[in-house]
Image 1 (tube, rainbow, N blue to C red):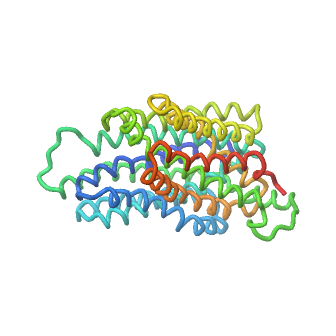
Image 2 (image 1 turned 180 degrees about the horizontal axis):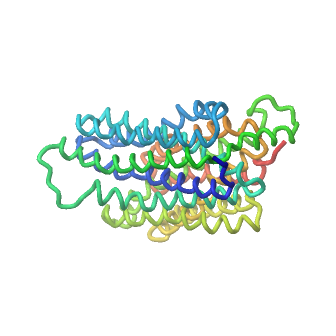
Image 3 (image 1 turned 30 degrees about the vertical axis):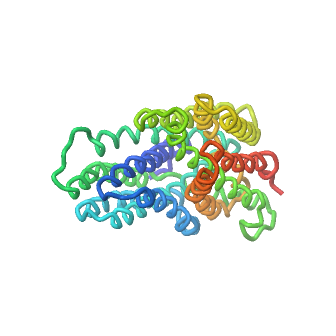
Length: 399
């Protein structure tokens, strides 16, 4: 069968990123649902996010090395299958009404998402030489669309109103059908990607290495990659940390209820979707590193405004950061992997490991909040954005 064009491949990868966001954000639905089902404390409920981010750290490098052996299209196929397997495992987990089995199923599902990230991000950049940041930002905008629609799906099929369950086991089983539906869709997508024969871009990566002729033996000899990995760590940590404490901050400053506060969270994450569509257009005119520097600087200013002003101004400022977070991941990724050539796949795995920042930065902000005040604890993400500003101005440069 004839290999499809790069344009067709990018369209297919857009679907990949949509489901990546859709699956990931369902964790926000699982946490309150399983907390009630298994009568968990907050720490135990938080293990859902811990297991998810731990998968990035544990499997990221493994999948990066795997992609050196197989093609990127096969990596996408395997990622869909692995994610589908994780969804299917929710069925026995619910039947047994066992929280550890749920966490195991979630780890498998998360591993599939890690492979999607590891294969998908460099796949996009290699398909769009010269427009890596712009194209990856546009494709990832559909990831944000998935994070916007995922909670609506979960609210309808998992958190149904006015439903009374006879037992806790019966309530746990409410997740079975939704995740089986997702598994079915993922399997269909895996088959489509396999039979549509997307282009194998490993030759493109090798050509970049040959053209560079820089004599580098390992990916760690590229300073811009090493600095970029740290930038991803701090970006994900800051984004997740702000999102994690936003509802608590609204309750603290404005004394509003959970349901009303949750509606504002949608604005925080929805801002990332809007920002990515706009950012993709802007980066066709302005250098990606300059866009990244501007967004990091504005994020710092917005947090300072929040800390010193408080009240409704603080909430509006913190929500607005979601918009400026939008281009950061795809831009940092593309700048970090620029000119890596044959090292691109393993570098992608290393970058995915850095997403563990989302598991480590929020507890640090929590400690600040415990010892000082919740609003002053936002000094932690400020330091994260200062590092991103440094990377955008100097760290991204290839030496």
